[in-house]
Length: 362
Image (cartoon, rainbow, N blue to C red; front, side):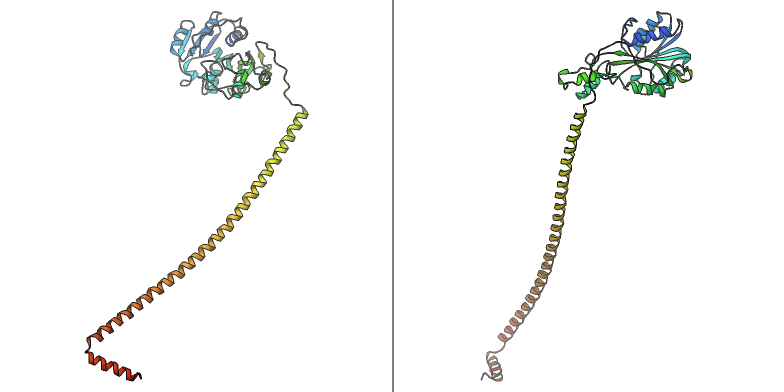
């Protein structure tokens, strides 16, 4: 990671100074610190300057070279391909994940490995962006999700966390959250650009009134479950917000009369939809009945056409047979005429006269 920052412990509303203050207040000089994703070593150098022994892990070789000149030990390694226990050897009194977990595809596995590298009284401290920040909520209301080079929507983020999912992540990794702080930033003051004029009236005030809408980053301190004392809260502690911002006084719940009018409007709309549905249902049933009747009529006509085709076929057969008989009769007549023409004329006359007498013509 190539981020460069100035670590000023007097800055009360910044994640890296908050991490440094947590370590300085809880650990003595000489304690071993592991800065996972140490970048160029800005935070580690601030801690080393206060007497801590600081090791770093960094995937970017260029940044690691800078950090190696400022920290005690720097290892170039990728947490996605190498297990944390394979990269460094513990124990450590504190392990830092400063804006790192959101860049990992499996942060839970890395956190579990980190727990195994802690000293008996060691702890983990991490800074994690809040994806439920008001700026992201407003952007989504406008239908926008635009990645940036850094910040809440850093294009290299693989995971996104809310206060609830951070609690679940630490719990699943075997950690109890002992404290949680939040840096504060107005929804219109982040790198997520919001067109205030495009928002409906009152929406900005409503979002600003949300409890965690100003929480830009959470700084979470966690201790292993087995090492948690009785006085360490097992539930998520109250968020200690590092700056104070006045929130607008917004009424969340509508008045009862508004609820009643809304319910009446919904009832009227539902009744209209039901009536429209029944009308459409009747139309479809009528259309179905008509289709059945038409199908029956088509079947009847098809039967009549077939019957007439059968009759026509029979008539055609009889005509062919009649033509055949007529042709045979014509052939017989022509044959008889030819025989008559071949007989002598006087014989024909005698024969004809004989026939005439026999039938009484003479």
